[in-house]
Image 1 (cartoon, rainbow, N blue to C red):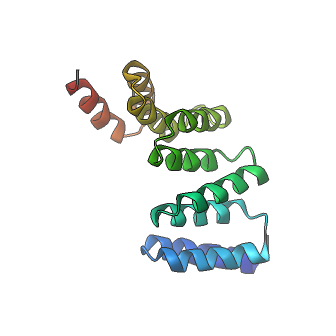
Image 2: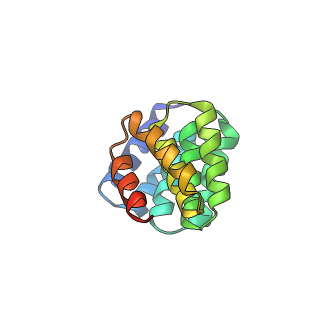
Image 3: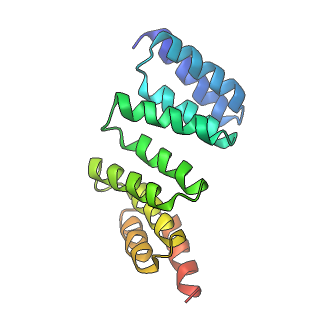
Length: 152
């Protein structure tokens, strides 16, 4: 990876953190023009597109990141988030499963999968995953467990 690609990637992250998602996409595009195999730039651009509700564009970027690096768990979690927003809970759960195959201690993947299971109507599976997320340090999991428990 070239220094210029990394510079544009870092600029894109900064713009995304400042909620300038269009500017972030421009920077990620520049990074990818220099290095078309820059997995993190695809994920960064995918996130910016997701926030801007370009779900198809986000999916393409996450798909490309996974094609380049099938072991990059973050791309699976990010793609799962898009699937949840499209109410494709089965697809999201499958992506979270793949993320957990890559990193079995990933609290965020357990949390995401628990939420997807809850939305899909699998209350017991959701609570199991959310408890796993909580044991691994995900603070949001406790709140979600309480909400599900109140819905009995």
